[in-house]
Amino acid sequence: MLRRALVTALLALTISATLTAPTQAAAASPLDAVKTLLTARAKAEVASDRAAFADTIDPQAPAAFRDAQLKSFDGLTSLPVQSLSYDVRVDLIGDLTRAVSRSEYGGATVYLPQTIRALQFTLDADAPGLDDMWWTYVQRDGKWYVGGNDDVTDLGLEPTESMWDLAPVVTLQTPHVMLIVHPENRDRGQALAASAENALRTIAQRWTLPWPGRLVGFVPSSPDELATIIQATIDVKKFVAFISYAFDPESLRATVPRLYVQDTNLSRYGTAQQTETLVHEFVHAAGAAYTGPYTPAWAQEGLADWIATGLPKPEAPTPQLNDTPPRNDQFGAGSQTDIVRAYRDSKSLVAELAVLKGKAAPFDFFKAMGADIVRPGNSDYVVDKSLAVLGLTTGELIGALRRG
Ligand SMILES: [Zn+2]
Image 1 (cartoon, protein in one colour):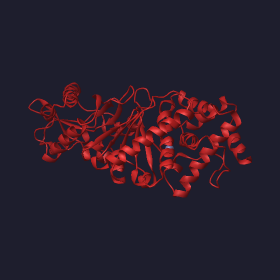
Image 2 (cartoon, rainbow, N blue to C red):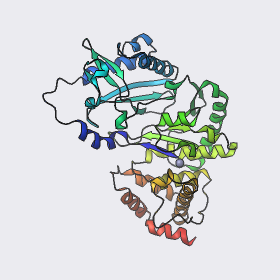
Image 3 (tube, protein in one colour):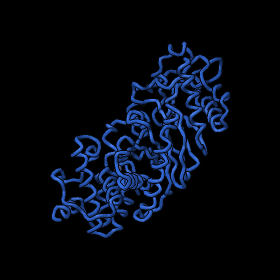
Image 4 (cartoon, rainbow, N blue to C red):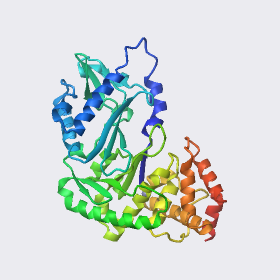
């Protein structure tokens, strides 16, 4: 299963149109002052300087907000952080300040731009993971502070909650994997990290494109916790694990992928099947660098299942397959049977591609799809174009699978 966020680019159109109507002679933008505040905040976090961090919180904020901020600080500073920084911008989704009720801040001047956290752990290869924070900034006696985080939830912009914001965490590290778990799950986390190392050895034999080969993963204690931290729009109880990444707003390239385990389900499987599941997920992680925002789910899931199950031959199509490959929504919505069929048909389409054009063809196809930065609405075009390079059409691929 793969979860991708296209936070910044997609929201831009709708929200800025609603909220950033022209305003009369606006005061000087607090953007630079807020950037200075966040530089101090990041510095305090990296240095584990709790007092300096506390100085960045609105002195008039409710105790609950202040306590949650400090709890987040304590959790984050318990982790092996390589670098941390914040970017503040209004060019992607606009200035959201008009959505803030100033009376909640005692009538003080407030500011709500987009805040992007770039957090890199020591295990991360060469780039950070990105998260939107949606903090509200408030000015008191000329100084800016972080004052709130839930003023735009009505717009669907939920506060980012990380595992360490919710409860204490520990890290379990093997040569290529770092798992973040709650302390009571330490033993289970160690077993999972060992399975993950096995999965990485397997993928090294089957995945042929360069990738960093290491990963940071999260093992929440419950499906509800998982749903909170990934802001799930699907029923996580149906799934066993996710790879999640966003697309960098500038380059539209994938940010560092993260693993999320739905262990209520995964832990029910035998060890071999757990490892196979992790191989599937790691294909998504390895493929992130070759993925564009509109690489379709069937190509992602088909490739992941084909590799995880040992590069098998195609199976006969299910009754669900029609003239086109499974649609993106068929991998998350519908009954369990329907979802399983979407995966199976996708795996067989990728396997058929390997039968027709050789074992390298699925990789060449995948790479070709991600090579162009795709724009909204032309996913079909990119699939067709990428198959054409191999001398095939989608119709011919499906036809060959049907004939068996
Ligand atoms: Zn998947």
